[in-house]
Length: 165
Image 1: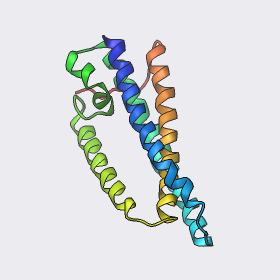
Image 2: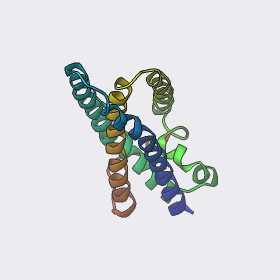
Image 3: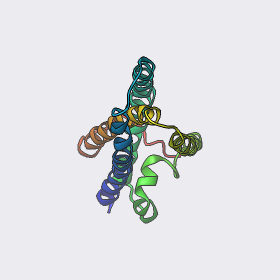
Image 4: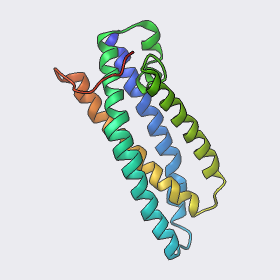
């Protein structure tokens, strides 16, 4: 049951990220069919650099990805039916985690939903410029979650904390 929960947790998170990348890619590609000025290219480069550094590297690689993997490892070793059934939410830290991380996860989710709604109102190529950075950042996150999870579920030790209360 523990291994099933861990795989469902990581797999569910990866499905969510993969679906987001799948949805963001067409508008991102479509934006390149428009006539771009120098300002579009500048914003693309700056936005992508900021997203890759703050969201992908600092957000995913240094924070969320190892925590998801550590929580999947903990779930494999300490399964309970409620945690296994809601494993993707458990691994992301929506419940059974330290209060500070739980609040941060919920606030980040609210912020992402607001950002998604606002970006939909942008016209092309601006929407595609934003979507390009986000799709690349989420792809980076996908890869780092996969890597950390493989390590967490197969290695004898994993140095990251699952942040269990």
